[in-house]
Length: 359
Ligand SMILES: Cc1cc2nc3c(=O)[nH]c(=O)nc-3n(C[C@H](O)[C@H](O)[C@H](O)COP(=O)(O)O)c2cc1C
Image (tube, rainbow, N blue to C red):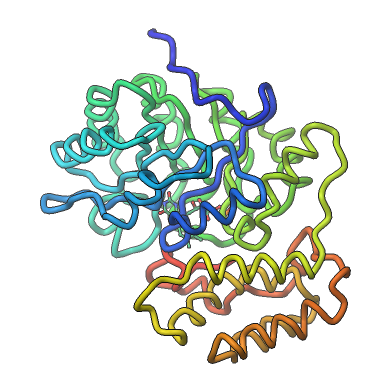
C-alpha cells in the first residue's frame, strides 16, 4: 500500500493534534479568527460546502479559506453524493489554499440524510466505497473523512473503516455516536478506540470533549492521534491553548469572568456585518452565548437574562452585570450540570445549524 501523505505540521511537534470541528453557521472566517486569537487549533475545517448538480462553492465559506489569516491550515468539507459533482467541487476547491478535502459522513439532519448525503450515506457502504474511490482519484493531496459510527446502529462501522484503509484516507475524524443518536447521550469512545486500532491513518476523537482534562482522558482511552472540539470551543475559546498546555505538562490557563466579557465583545465585533440589523445580530450572538452561559453560573441566571436582551446595549448590560460584578471569579472549566444551552435541542429538525443544535 502507498504511504499516506504527511499531515500539515502541528503547532507542537509530537503533541496530540487538535482541530476545531466543522460547524455550520459557526466556523466561518470571523469565528476562526476569534478562536485563533485565544489559541488556534492545529487544524480548522470549514462548514460543509453543499454539493449537487447546480452547486458552486458557497462564497461565504470560501472566504474562510481565501482570507484565512489564522496561520493554521483549513480543510474544506463537502457534503454530497453525486460522484461527478463531488469531483468537480473538489477540483475547484483545490485551486484555493486548502489543506485537504474532507467528506461529511455524519450530518444527522433529516432533511440532509433523506437526500442520502452526510449521515445518510452510512446506510450505503457500497456508495461510500464509490465516493471514496472517486475523491481519492481526484485529490492528489490530503483526502480526509469525518464520520459517525453508523446510521441506526454500528453495524457498518468496521466495513467503512476498511474502506478508509482501502482508499488511503489520510485523516479520519470520528464523532462517537450514530446518526440516530444525534447529539444525545453518551459518546461511544470504545468505538473510536476500535477505529484507532483498525485504520492506518491518524484518528481525531470527537464528541463531548468539554475540557483539556477530558481531552487527555479521551486520548488515553482511545489512543487517538488527537481531538476534534466543537461546541465546547464555542463555550471556551481558550480550550485549544489549554489542551496544548496540559499535553505539555504546563500549568493550564485559568479563565476569569472578566476574560469571558472580553471574548463576548470580540465575538460581537468580529461577527458584525454591514446590513445586519442590530436586533438580528443580538439574536445571533445569543446562539453562541447559549454555550458560553453553561460555565458562567450554576443557576443559569446569565442565560436567563441574556436571552431577554433585545439590543446591543441591553446585551452588554447583562454581560457587565454577570461578568464584571466579580471579574476575577473563575469561568468553570466544565459546563455546570443541568445548565442547558438550549431546551428542546433533542427534538430539533435541522441539527446542523446553530438554530437548532446545542449541548
Ligand atoms: C451548530 C453545529 C453545526 C455543525 N455543523 C457540522 C458540519 O457542517 N459538518 C460536520 O461534519 N459536522 C457538523 N457538526 C458536528 C460537529 O462537527 C461535531 O461532530 C459535534 O458537534 C460533536 O462534537 P462536540 O461535542 O465537540 O460539539 C455541527 C455541530 C453543531 C453543534
